[in-house]
Image 1 (cartoon, rainbow, N blue to C red):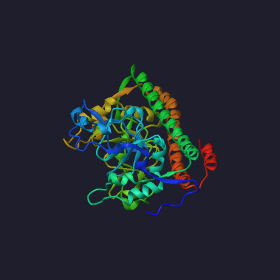
Image 2 (cartoon, rainbow, N blue to C red):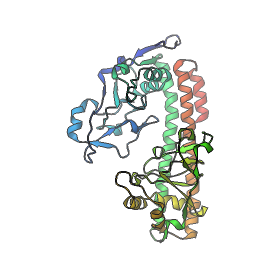
Image 3 (cartoon, rainbow, N blue to C red):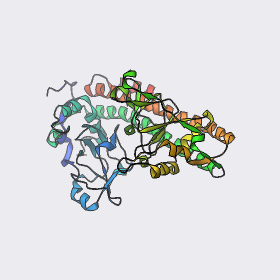
Image 4 (tube, helix red, strand yellow):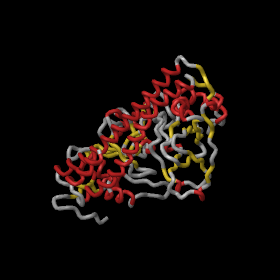
Length: 397
């Protein structure tokens, strides 16, 4: 592979030369069935946007996990996906200490020559990603062998330049993390408000404050640029739907939704996937689209539909053994706390600006993520100098 030319004083290093001795391995080959009392492991589907989703992980028995102590996480390791969506990365945080990983995840233990964050930045870069993609074994499923991972070229500017580039990336990621914490706090506040208002209230059918939206859309009626939300885009136990794909990726009839509609994942409802739409778009038919009957009760309806009680009811009444699905009729008939029209309107007045703040932060985070994707390749190639990037980031954050 012909590597791009670098500025004077920069070089490339083979990844294995930046790791501890025996500092690269893959995880548990046959994890077996889920063991509720077992050790949690990271799978490829848990890696997203440089983070590890720690919600509802697969757990393996301590007996199985004990055979793979070499990949037991301490925190600080770089994780890279080796199968399927090859090249997804994250740095293991201290919260993952004691976890392990699946066979499809490579664990890289970095030596003192570079930081884990620098290695992850480089693995996300164009040079490393191109190298990995050109060495995939695609006979059955895209797979990257460890021997090729060892040889991944890592860009090595002088130490001071590395630190400056890493600081630019950290500034963007820190702001994204702040927005995420704000959104989490907003949801906690809304949930507490809902519970407080509901303690001394009456009851109402969900169907009396919201209605099912049945608006089907065929693929040929779409431009391909419309936001598309599938169950894979909906986080568990979180009402903010911050990511989506494009309608160009769909090939069958979907459901239409509008900003402010509530999307309820009906397939395996116990996964607790319920959230509010931040854009107009289309979604999977395994998602129920619910619209508030009146604007004044929209936030109350969101909190009700995303409550543990409603999700548990939907799961209990769902049809099917292997692929259970909830029905709108069961949701519509379920009674939830209701403080009355006047109190619900007051709740909406308090909730609406909080929801807007969380959604504004999510939009900012998406813009910052795109900025990171634009700046880092230029920084890693030396085409953009750090002081210029710092000005761009300063304006953005």
